[in-house]
Length: 196
Image 1 (tube, helix red, strand yellow):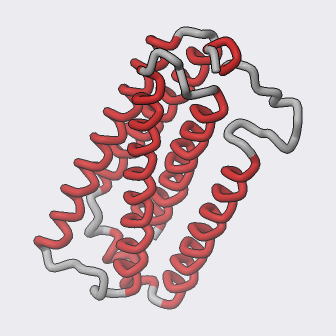
Image 2: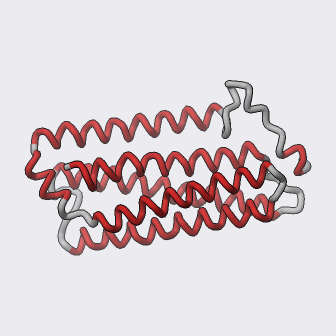
Image 3: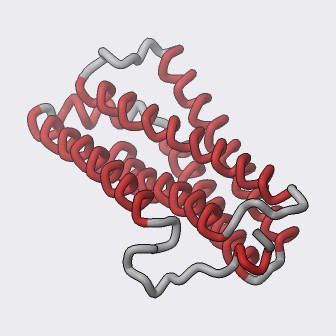
């Protein structure tokens, strides 16, 4: 496939949204799963308001806020990578994918540091229902970020090949997955760090 052919995707067709319909079904299921987790957070928060409030105060809101900014910035970089790829600016698109991955790496480092803080303070999965949900939701999200990093690494490797064996649909799939990680974090951050 030539690079010119790689740029042709008909987005007017409903059954071929950016990234493909199968990916969007997966994203829908993921968002539904997180939605159920957030409903559980609200439900148990109403049953144990004081415990949830005291538990939330133990979270590092500074790190949570910083990680939110980092993920949103990396999402912007990913959008720029897709835009530049569409324009045939493959070298610049590659640079923006790398910047996206730097953001993902920073997020992972700071999230792991936050986990280290919690474990050092003896706050584990069985501390209370707030922390059970905190660990489950944030670790599951971290796994998604790691998967996103693998997808972006694969995209970079494919872009470096002379045959340009990655096409726009592949890159858009990776971008849609990465933006899903952003969206999930935008739901988790206020629910866990700010509300209770």
